[in-house]
Length: 93
Image (cartoon, rainbow, N blue to C red; front, side):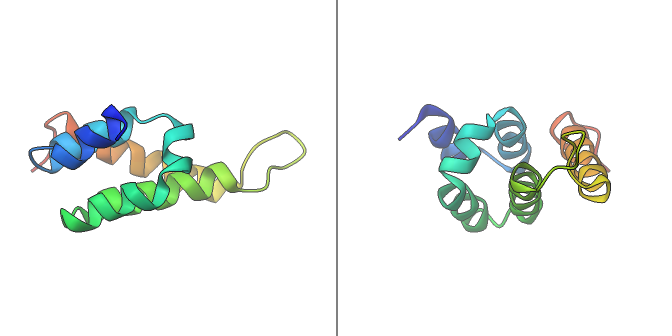
């Protein structure tokens, strides 16, 4: 198992899982999408599942003539990333 996948699997709580997901390279996220989603599902980390799905959708989205993904998808992905980063950084309720 890749070290990053092991970290996600062995994470001690959702904050640690969020940190791993935020640091995960796109190549690993795409290749092991199902494994990552299953790890989040088993941990009942719904925000992690949503983040993985959204990030994957963003990577796979058709680009416009400027090479940009759909603006609404990019905006949503950025808001999700920022929220997960705040959570991982201890900036939660």
